[in-house]
Length: 267
Image (cartoon, rainbow, N blue to C red):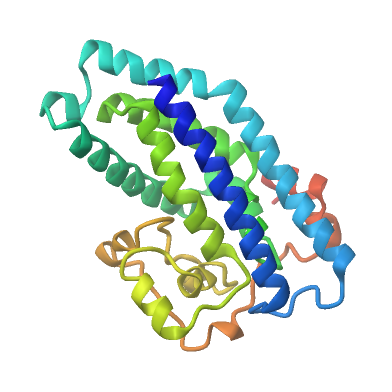
């Protein structure tokens, strides 16, 4: 299991880096919103701040959770417990079903982050970004990632998931998350076709709107079907009119790295 996991994880990182470079170039040449025009230093500092948050989360997961997830997956395999061990699926179908249900859980976890005040305190860090771009994909408070990682432990046991299933899911998920956070616009026809299957920039710009009704929509991270099934799908006629960020979080001190880390304890 560890060999498969390491192989997928290594490729996932290279894919993420490749997608990041591509989207950074796209944003710089043809940005959707005119953020940081002729402000190279401010743009770099914005990206650095978001990237530092991502590195904090990556370090916490690598040091604190991968080993626990591996234990849970090996325990489920050894004891043959978990939904997809009990119904005895072929390995390929086992993997497909686990990935689908991980994404189903991710949808509801995101929705919980908006609906439950305690979790919203942490999730505000992500939504308070005034200038959403590809680096916003990394902009999450470590508290949110901590709870998300903890909840994955019983999920692995419940589904009978293998660690490489989780790594494979992340390999699909993170590039899509990078794309729909990027400060880019796709041709209308391509965006419409893509959002039949996955989240697109047009969809996710609505989710980052300051208008509460729009913020509380388009929760899914990978497959767009969950928003359609559970009535949270929304589009705008003119996404260029979207005002990003959160009311009350425009001040400079709240947008600093320290300010973002302190966000959950602010009223």
